[in-house]
Every structure is written in C-alpha cells, then in structure tokens.
Length: 290
Image (cartoon, rainbow, N blue to C red):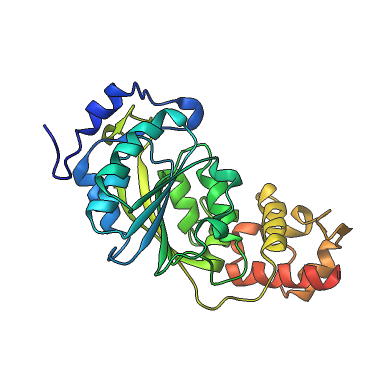
C-alpha cells in the first residue's frame, strides 16, 4: 500500500534494498509516520525553510520534512546502501531533496548551505555514535549567529539531559551543558521509546530543541571547551586541583591566579559554576596567555 506521497511503506523500502541497520554506523531506523511527522513539525513552520538532515537512512524523517512543507531538504548520508532509497524520495519531490553522500564529521556545513535562500535549520535522528561530536562542532561554529536558525535533534535521553543541564542538576551538568547554555536556549521537547525504532535500542531517546542566542557572553569557544574539559575531567575535585595544568595557547595557566581573577572560590567544584562563571574563566585564560 502506497503512502500519501506515492512512496511505499518504509518497511518495504528497507526490505527492497536490504537496509539492515548497522551498529557500526549508529543506525536505528524510525518507521512510525506519526512520530516522524511530529519531529518534523517540531522544527516550526517549514514553508520557505531548508532543512539539513544527517543520517537519513531509508528516509523516514526526510519524507516527513518534505510532506510537512520544507522547501528543500539537504540529506547527508554516509551509508551508500541508503542512496537508492533516498533517490526514490528525490523523484517523488522533484527539486526539493539534495542527497549528499559523505561523512557528516568532515562536512563543510557553511559551504553546503551557501546560496540557500530563507532560513536553514538542522533536524535529524542523529547516529548515536557521532551525535555529541556533531553537536559540539555546531555549537563551536563561528562566526555567530551561526549558519542555522534552529536545531531539532534526537539523542539518547542521558545525553539530552546533559545538554539541557544547569548547576541545579549537578549529576548531569558538564561540558555539554556549559557549551549549550552559552550559545543556545536548549530544552527537551519529548521522549521517544525504544519500541519506535528498528532495531530497538536499549535506551529511551529524546528530541532536543536548541535555538541560538542572538547575543553572547564574549569568549573564545575553543578555550571555553578546554576550560570546561579540564574542570569536569576531575569533577569531584576542587577547581584549584582540577584546573591545575590547564594549558591554553600552548601555555600552562596558574589555576589559583585564574580563579582569583574570575572571583570564583578555589574550593568550588566544576558542577557549582554556572555558564557565566566558565565564560569568565575562558576569557581570562585567553588574556593570561595572549
């Protein structure tokens, strides 16, 4: 039985092209059209928008984005087995689907969307094994505001909780929470149960929305990453110890001097420092190593 867009059900597509999900690629396919439609609608009004999708697989979310009205979807897929299935969608939506066969971790995103008219958003059921790395790269994007207007992404629930965490949630608060809070307003929209996927993962997933902040607390993103990585690498220790040996621009920084300049107690732990505090540390670290 054909769907409303004239394409066969996803299960038939997977069978036709022998698209068994590969664990090595972090693949878990979504067949539930109600769910893919809900994810697509979470991106906001799609008319006039270009959506960048990573890891479309057989194209369940791709089809939802197009049927919900996206002007164009740019789908980046590493697995060449999925390309024929995506080509069928491209034929059903002439001129609205651009398929890019490549590795998302090495993609030049700004070049990919160069010349695109209208807003650009990212919407993806990210492969579990590269989701965090992709998010960090997008968060560290410069200049700011970035090339995307919004991100609606799927992660494992525990990763999603780290993305939206603040010092109020000390167990989950870490580098991801600092970077996300610094550059975006992040929130969990809804959960997706394991049963929604083929094959079903062992964990619940969550859809996270990240909207870039128009204005930022001034600091260097790479240095902020270095400071937070050092601080949270030994999160049970006081900052005077966890920041010991921190190196920025090839120079080692005296932790006590840095903390004093930032007006942060040396006895605090990383989980007690808010985003503004880490920004101060990063900015001062840059000044001390200039």
